[in-house]
Image (cartoon, rainbow, N blue to C red; front, side, top):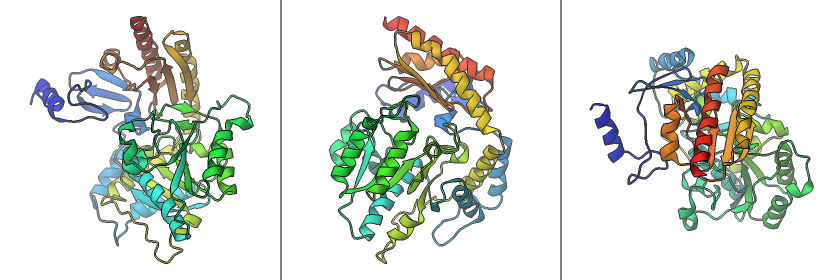
Length: 431
C-alpha cells in the first residue's frame, strides 16, 4: 500500500482509542521515532509532548533500553509464569519493593494498567472475604477519577463526567464523593475532607477499600490537589479499618516531582498500582504491590488463592526493559530535570490564562494543563498542532503537556508556544 491507501484502509477498518468508525478523527502515520521526535511517513518531524500517553520518559529508541530488549531476546522472549519464574521478574520485583513504601512486600505482575487495577480490587474484596466480612464489597472513591476501561476499573471511574456513563447500570455500584477541592497552595481547612469523611463513616461496614489517584487526577480531568487531602484519607482509612489503594499508573516514576506521588503526603498505601512508565514506554507491563497484611490476609481462610493469572504476566522482555528503564531513571538527575520542566511550564503557559477561552492553567512536575471553558475541536486542533511541528493530543476541555523527561528547553518552548498559539486561535474562532 502507498501512503494514501494505508491511511484509507486504517480509516475504514481500524478502531483507534475513543473514536467512531463512522466519523473517525484524523490519524498520522509515524515512520520512526528518536529522542523526543516523531517522524511521519510524509516527512514532518513532530516534537512529542505526550510521551506516548505518558510512558516514554526517556524518549524513543534509547540505546540502553534497546540493548536490554536485544539481550533478553537472545535468551527467551516469553515463558509462562505459572509454575516458572525468571531473573528479570525477580529482579524487577526486588526493585519495586525497594523503591516503594516499607509495608509493600508482595508484587503481582499484570499486562496493562487496567488489569492491574482489576487485580487491586480483587485483592481488596478477597481480603475481606477471607476475614469473614464479605459484606465489605464496595469501593469508595472520588469524582473526576479514571482507573481504566475494563469493567472493574470502569466501576471506580467517574460515572457522570467520565467516559463510561453508558455502562452505569451494568457495573458494580460503588460509592462516590466530590473530587478533592484543595489546591496545593491553599491553606488546609477541615471542610475540604468533610464529604469524604461522612461517606466513609456512613458506609464503612460495606467499604472494602478506598481507591484514588494521588496528587493528580489524570484522564478524568487532569486535576491537581493538595497532599494534606491524601494524608487525611490515609488516616481515615486506618482509623476505620479500610484498605487504601493508590493508582500511580500515570503519576509514578517521577512525573509529579517525587518518585511516587504518594510520597508527598508521607503515607503508605495497602495496595499500590503501577504501569505506563514502568517499561519506559517499550512494552506493556503493570504491577500491583500489596502489603504483607493484605497478601497474607487473603489466605487467612486457608483457601485464599488470588484468582488472577494473565497469560503474558511478567513477560521477560518487558521485565528486562523495565529494569533498565528504572536504572536509567535512578542514575539520572531526574529531580532537577522535573523541577526545571515544571518551572518552564509554569512560566510559558501562564500567558494562556489571559485568553477568553481559558478557564484555568495549572502545572505539577512534568505536567502542564490548560483547561478551556468549551470542549476542544479535535478535528481542527490535532492537524493544527501537526502543522506547527508538535504532537499534542487534547481531549474534552483540556490541552495539556506531559513530555519526556529528556526534553530540552528549546523543544519544550516549541511545545508551550504551540499550545498558546492554538488555544488563542481556537478562542478567536469561537468568539
